Image (cartoon, rainbow, N blue to C red):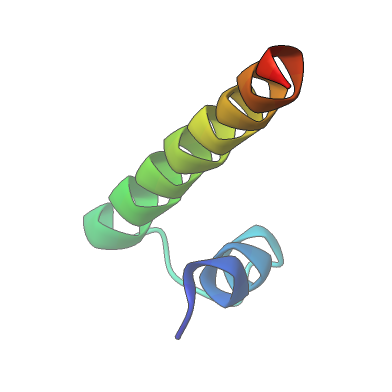
Length: 46
């Protein structure tokens, strides 16, 4: 399952609140945040 599919299912309550799922969600949210910041920096440098 991709991280984006996981996030959708996790937020919809389709997955349990196991430690592994909670960690996956936290790491995915951090990754998304970094991607947004990199995109902002990339457009600022162009």
